[in-house]
Length: 371
Image (cartoon, rainbow, N blue to C red):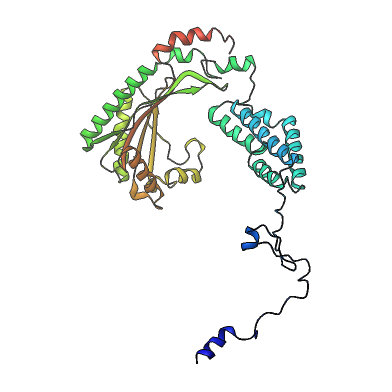
């Protein structure tokens, strides 16, 4: 039994791979390993030596690829600097177009080389994002936002931009009209009287929202005027007014107070046939061309030729047929806290001069004879 088990491991060569041919396989050597290698002996004749293939030679980036990516980077940098300096017009000039085509040509040439293709692809991607068209459009949007049109302005343009008045408006008008402070005081007084009278007649309570806004007018020459536009705070009733007859009663009371203060009669901007406004536009603005079905009434009065303008609105969500107006009012409520519907009062004024600016305004006008 023992002999049979031993024969399993020391038996013949059945199943073993065939012997190599005399002299070994063609081109094969055996390296010195083990004790032979330690003793410094050469491999025996016929031993096979397996050698690793030499490492592949690394290919670098050619000069054309470097030129393409460098030229693209410089071109983009120049365009962004020109945009930042307000040179939107120059971006669309013939010179920039020619330079862009030259850079594009270098990129295309790099794409046709094996070692420059990677940098060429990167340069092409950058060019697709930042080119004369895209950077020029960005510059135009920036100019529109900042009113900085044109990269290089003449002395005449700079002089006109500093004009203290408004193009087409008589220079003395702002000096002859009430000042900003006078308009604000008058508006506050009239609104207080209107609120008191409506409270007495209808029992309204009021919510004040927003804040006084004073901002410079544009002067018509690309700059800011010394004249200001004024918007008062907003007063809105906490009670809705949805009955048409009650709305007209409210407007009648408001009109009485305005007349007592020397202002014009209220003018219904939401009525059909007013100022040539089409019925389609009335529907778009007020929900319908029929006042009985409108979600908004808008009435207007002024102190012409003085600048104060008084607006009275009535917001009625029961006439909102689509739900869009409710969404709009809810956004206003979330933003400012004003009630969703009710009677609303606000005062505007345009082209008014602050008292502290009168002397400077008159002095500056001396530099603009004939404007």
